[in-house]
Length: 412
View 1: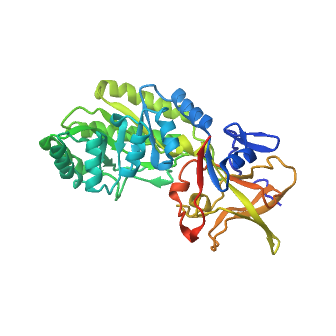
View 2: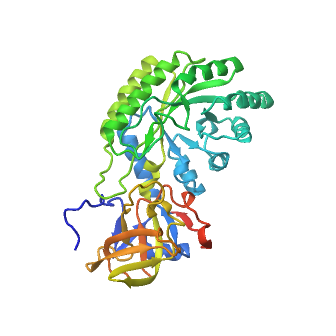
View 3: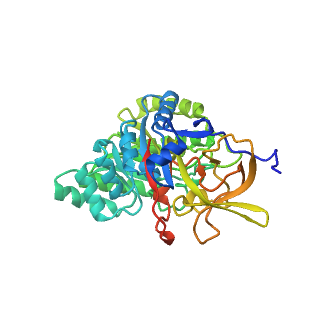
């Protein structure tokens, strides 16, 4: 029996169904699977991407720029689509930079972050004319040499490791000892070097944490980040033009989690925009979002290849698992494993249910997509769907593990 008092997943109300099938990009799931040609696959819905950006536009001040952090999902078709919806793209490697440029993103609105940028990558960034978020004193002389070699002033912002954390975030990216950015007390030294070498200083990047569902924590971090940037700007070699306050907006993955309330975040940013107009009049405030923009618009779909019962427990053995979706397996940062929302995509709303575990084809007990969830009674050939899969899916998974085929990705 299912404990009716136990927390449940937030409803996946962004998706529709028709005749018992999940609908993705206006297609019934079995039709989409036939069109893709094989399972497993990821599918991201264009309409849901547009809707999410629209929700943000309605909630946030129009002066705030939206950037897509493409590490969340670097599928080229998706990056190209997102480049037409947001103002900028944030990349974390030269490989991602190539995808962003190929997608038609404006180099003036591309920023490049990451704690381990190699010298050739920094040269590529200067040649492309993108903004480099400097995360180490080592990067500055490399950028200065690249500027001299190319005859182009390197565009730089300083990524600051703030002296506070984003409370309640799934992953803390700032505060305390961190490999990301430079500590606050080191920033003046970097600003002085940039001024001496004639680098084109543009601003600051502050990213305190990610995957946060508490609006008050996000508001507090944004306010503290703004105050810190305002203080650091006093020693900057040029007026601040770029102020990236990070992201951190979370989505509900696990039972009991609720969707983020955008209203207080919008009000808080409106107050910061008003202050910036007086205190840093040249600055554009940027919010950098990855997971929040694309995560809820994607599903992972895998086909049941075997149905087994072991000592009373039902196992639905699928043709894909942690090799394609490490996050859903619980092996990408979960301390205590919890289930992503899941369904039998061609039996939506079916009255007959059972408690079953959906597992992958790999020879490890870690290959678990859904652990003892109440699902419609499923058979070989049915399609298991893992929701909230538009971010940190294929590119964040060990696809070569045990030699199974790689996963297909489609934008529909």
